Length: 137
Image 1 (cartoon, rainbow, N blue to C red):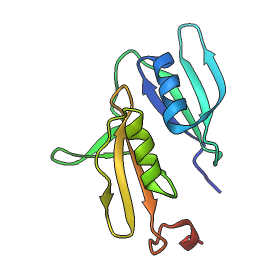
Image 2: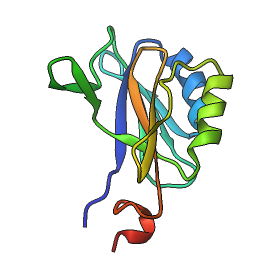
Image 3: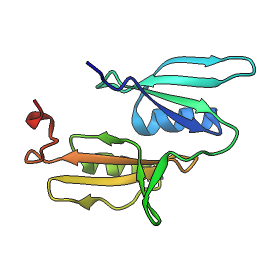
Image 4: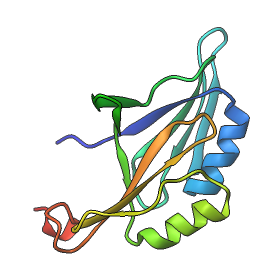
């Protein structure tokens, strides 16, 4: 019944962010708009999915994560990839700040950060993971 339509990301420099997201996430631009006195944004879609990614121009950085306990933070969503190593290598090659790849047994993952410091998580599910696409019915 429901599916994720779009993910909205606050960015302080829309032109810089457009170049960065197109280069690093390989998204395809669908639309750009600017409403006088309201908002300025650009909408993308991922090449292998219908989920949208929307960059919205903001005046100052805003949190895109929440605190779990103490100083431990978590992102609101993650990106799933089939093979995590090439994605990690591409981001590192492009100078993107990342954490190391962590192996959680049935899943591998790492975090990376956009030019505004927005954190994102990338995961790759092993076939034995209950969240692997072949195991979800």
